[in-house]
Amino acid sequence: MVKKYENLYINGQWVKSGSGDIHDIINPATGDVAVQIPMSGEDDVIRAISAARAAFTAWSQTTAQERSDYLNAIADEMDKRADDFSRALTLTLGCPKSVAPWLQVAGNSNGFRNYAKRAFHMERVDKRDGFKVVKEPIGVCTLINPWNYPLGQLTGKLAPALAAGCTVVCKPAEQTPLQDIIMAEIVDKIGLPAGVFNLILGEGAVLGPTLCGHEYVDMVSFTGSTRAGVYISQYAAPTIKRVTLELGGKSPYIITEDADLESAVRDCVAKVMMNTGQSCNAPTRLLIARSRYEEAVAIAKEAAEKASAADPNKDCTHVGPMSTERQRQTVLGYIETGIGEGARLVTGGAEMPEGLERGAYVRPTIFADVSNDMTIAQEEIFGPVLCMIAYDGIDQAVAMANDSQYGLSSHVFAKDEEAALAIATRIRAGQCFIQGGSFNGEAPFGGYKQSGNGREWGEEGLHEYCEIKAIIS
Ligand code: NAD
Image (cartoon, rainbow, N blue to C red; front, top):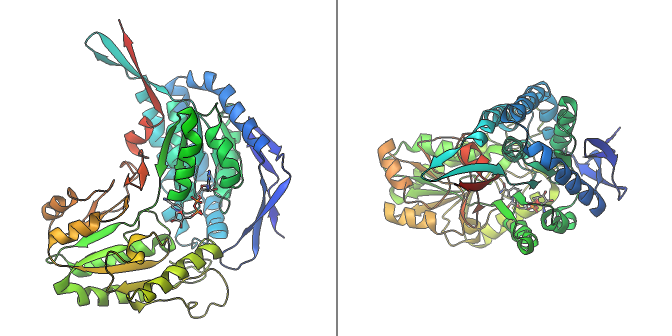
């Protein structure tokens, strides 16, 4: 029996959608309907924005202690609902059940706790010569998220917005609304004041113009494709809203000639295959000194073959299906393009993984003999596909790393940390992981160039939701 969700969450109430439309969410592991959700109409969006606007005056004037208490209460409830979050991720995203708890769920409640502490930063007064500078919440925020890390992306926006004193309208991706529905249940349970958190569900392309263009909205925070980011910026432009964008990436991973090749290549392959290749910061361009190229290809091949795609409900699966059949077709299209452009298919390819007959699966794929100007090296594939590129000299490696429309993330593995740091400072990207470093929820996250603008997480994540006021005497 398919579970059917009936309601949106607007102004502290569970309400029926005005459109009456129902959307089937497909389980990507099987192709069967997983759950059904209501789709919001434009009237629902306007109701949600109006509720957020009405709630803003009181919420923005709560004390930091009050907001901090609410955020900590949300965190405690999130811990109690951790299994529900994980199950939802396996069902709708196909995230393996052995992976979802640590990759997608753990850490988010602490994200809320960290912003519970940062709520007090809103009360700091910066006294300067003849004037004071204070921070105030920007207002009503629309939070639009994609499907790849739906809970993490919600936390990275919602926790700082609430800590700052903003009110919000959340719109998750069509494929993965369940974490936002669970979050609505949580805020309802802890008694967050009505209108502070509102949830609408539906298609971004349909709801976007109102969600991002309405006069009552002060800020839009978006994660997703560069294509949608451009539309969102256009909807927001006539009313001069603040827009923060976390967009795509094609991140480089430079391994120097004298580095520990085995550790570095394995680290890169693991990060590409993580979340079945659906990470915007995945290091999908591996840059290797020509003298060690074939050695690196052999290590990558072995690592990718160990990571074969399988049923996400099996205990030992690390790579599941793509999020949707549409995403699978996109990735297979890029694999065909890579072969057509003359790249060497080392392992993987467009066939279904062995032992699987249905589901949106793609084989972990490694391409060698890739040049940085090929389509597969320039466009975001968003699947378990790694491109290996040879370089002659570190200056060429840095130049190729920077030769991309994107600048979200980057990696350097050198002989030692000092050597890696010297290269890290030359790369145009919002993050650089050195010597195998991995995601840190306290570090600011965001892109240079067409990977977006603004930062999420950490202290910088709070600043995005603030206005600055100078009080002059
Ligand atoms: P998308 O950008 O179309 O969707 C992401 C979110 O934006 C969803 O909630 C969607 O409903 C909404 N949206 C879409 N068009 C909108 C519009 N015109 N106005 C307002 N909201 C809109 O992404 P997708 O189709 O789910 O994935 C396509 C590609 O995006 C992927 O292949 C990948 O390259 C990229 N992507 C990047 C990230 C990231 O974290 N940076 C995440 C997911 C997808």
